[in-house]
Image (cartoon, rainbow, N blue to C red; front, side, top):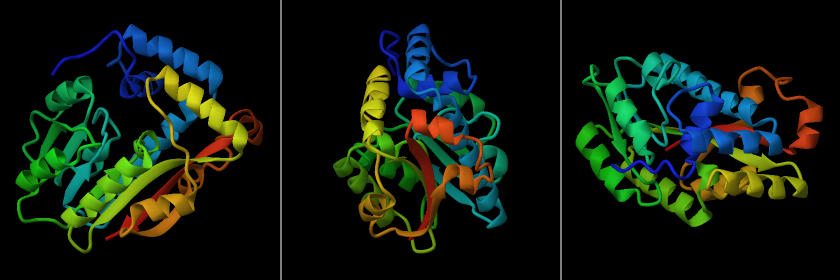
Length: 251
């Protein structure tokens, strides 16, 4: 795996904003520029991480034993492995830095593995998942913090192939960005370009259509899921008119 330290990587930018140390100067420069444009970015990063923790707690209480996590970042404190220590968990990310450090973090956990995977081409990921989970296909899928960086065609293809791979009884957790007005599109586009990605805000209806045949059980703002409705103020929404939403779906 080759690590390109000449261009920012959105996963490393996210790591820096969350207070992590697995990033480079180019990522820190990009993060600083993004936060000038989108001052709420650190709060949304925290909401995404807290949503992972909430999902991990819910899956633990539900007795989930098999988890496929997409675009995982680093499985450090507060990730799914903390809430589901006995489950079989397959973590994945396209960023080689996350994969290398993730493998080190999970080295003493034979029930967990970390692989490199590009979600725009899910077939290698699902082949690795088939080997890892064997005949067990009743799986909980984490798709938190990634779909808003994938276009409709790639998102639809990924979610349909995941549905075909998983058995009835499987569940999926997902987060996405919803615009609160036309002004948000320009902000998100500029912020994404600083991190080297394109950002795709969507409505709940558009997300539900992309996810079919997954069936959405509940879709709410992340702040509402987490009981922190005032975490982002109305004044901050006026400056950055978009919000993060999370949903739970079933097979």
